[in-house]
Image 1 (cartoon, rainbow, N blue to C red):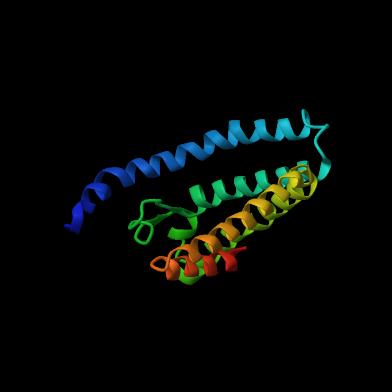
Image 2: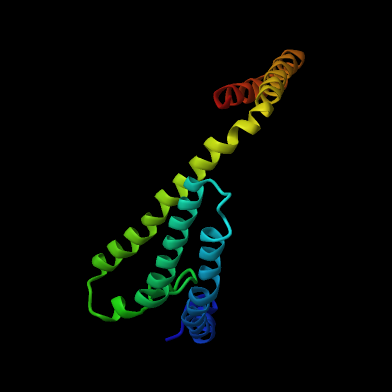
Length: 174
């Protein structure tokens, strides 16, 4: 079947290579990268705050789950038009309906969000206080820019409407 825009070249050459890489790379990362991460978090990281360390461990577990699901259970291609057409793996070839596959896929993707949000929020709460020194200069520069825009809009009648619109936009953002 001939596809438009030269997509048959992608299908003929790149999809097979991608599936081979997707079957080899997760095994390598499951045997080398993730154990090294866990070693660093559990053994070498006792000085790290325990909540942050637990969040990193949970986030690493979610990454392992991603590798297992997206490389063995549901192996889809990452190339844009082919993600709709090609689905290999245990779950795709078992005869499940597409809504069930999409629900499994969505639930696995959504599982990574809470661990990431928890990790980022804890880091912000713990280390954000050191960045609060930069807030007053930002407020000063924003108010100075607003005053400058007001003066510039009063100086010229030709650009008055444009700067008034810009001022309204900036005022809504600040």
